[in-house]
Image (cartoon, rainbow, N blue to C red; front, side, top):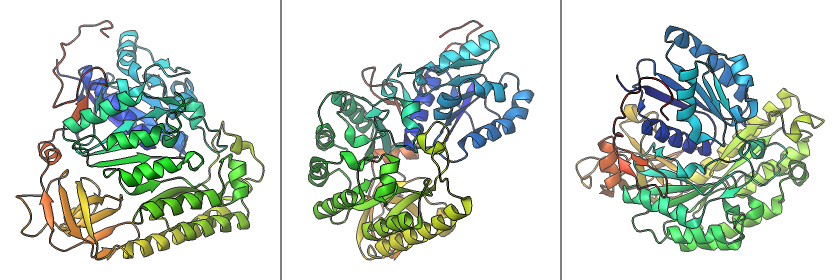
Length: 493
């Protein structure tokens, strides 16, 4: 009997992307194999988001589209997990009765068992836990990249932002032990990974659970002691919890990248109060000033919401003023949408769509103008790039490759010149000079100044990606998992 194939479709934030790596690791440990691009997989898993606009409609619309595949292939299974599953629970199988499994954010580790139970019982299985069952990083993971990895340092959130449903779906903050975090980072580096991004809903509040408010800065410094780890990033910090020791750790730890993604949400102090964001615009801008004093070339990015309930033209102009002063290298801009279950959803003075759209367009123009001005300043500078895959949609037609600079900027470069050692691969390190700055990327069309082949590049070229077994349960290994014996019925897990 051939192994069952699977496909995971991920919606939402980096935390969901990383959770999907954990889901893939468990499925492969249970004998599943990734589906090829063509053909219908035996299992489709939707890892959902409840934060983004129209998340519900997007999921149920997609489930409707795959219903004919399910009818044509009765043995096919469909599973829905993530934040929307945590929110909608049994409503999912009521609206889409062809779904086999629904699981929440707190029980990622249950998926293989629930799938087997659904097959055995021939009925949908819905399991939503109210609190964390197993910290996700103790679960196996099939990593998506040979050269860059996500490492969760905490899950959940203790804040009460009125527009956000995450605390209700992910629970209170739970911190990993520093030794476990560093063990996972070391395990990835041992397999050739060059870059690690530390993940947390409020990453810089790390340590709150074990009473060390300086824990995050210490963790950054400890990452600096890991030989072979060339780049450390983190996302996303909360301005209210940002401390001087974190800035010092960033500036004084060579492998911590000069990049900061820190959500602003609004430049209006009045709206920040309404949002229950416990900082004000002056504090936010003060943090940026101190970051740039320590790291003059740091690239700073942000998140901004337009059209929060009650937003006046004066409030919106305050946001525009902060954007102009902050000089963001890019910003993720969102039109406010009502999320059921959040306090903001029932606030008075919900803004008309036309007003929100017009303000959004003005904000996007300003963000792009500022980013373009900032990127033009990079022209003529030498940049070190970690060569990436899938970052440049036009690379094939332009004969370019793409990579990320240390400050996180995307650079499309020409892989030419005598310094190239055989061929440039994703995961290799190159140096080049920027020749053009656009609002969302840089271009480097001259010959490469240097090219360093890496173990990550070797693995990427061979199609190998790390598969971690969970901290404390073994180190990562490359390649396909050993096949499991086929079962003849009943629950084998």
